[in-house]
Image 1 (cartoon, rainbow, N blue to C red):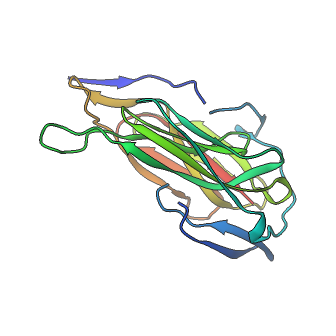
Image 2 (cartoon, one colour; image 1 turned 180 degrees about the vertical axis):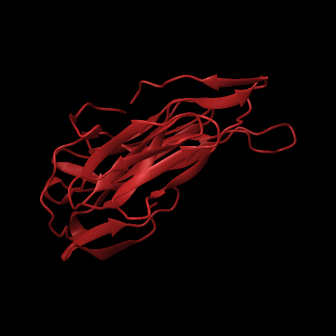
Length: 215
């Protein structure tokens, strides 16, 4: 028997480097593992307020560690006032296993806030700690939310104008599990699209929502 978890409503970082984006140098955080606030809507996607591109000094970068979640609940790492997330990720502190030691949990949320001011993470049944890499708001990227995908379909959060995705993630809309509570789903796409103009996410069975940080 296959069942799924319904819609949720609640709300890596080993290195840093600079990249050239449209002739402007931007700080980007590396990913080791790769919440929800309303924003304006345009062209079918939800947009947070854009910020002008500028270089963020390394000394201005701050890593924020969220609280450990309850089992199957989200952890949110919110940037300090006046800062926004440039990347993020998670640390699982418990990950459900079968009696034989096989994992049957799943990372159901790993994404920036829709206002771009933090990062959220959640497991299907385990405990997790979200982490966010924060920079001053003037240098922070713009957060974009894609549409809800079809079952086993692709969601793409498309960056506005000539901006490009520098980070991103996903939030599950549904997540399949069997009658024993073991995960039957997984994220099989979590990456920038081929053109770099957005972030794509896809689940094996369920519906998902991609989120992008664009600059």
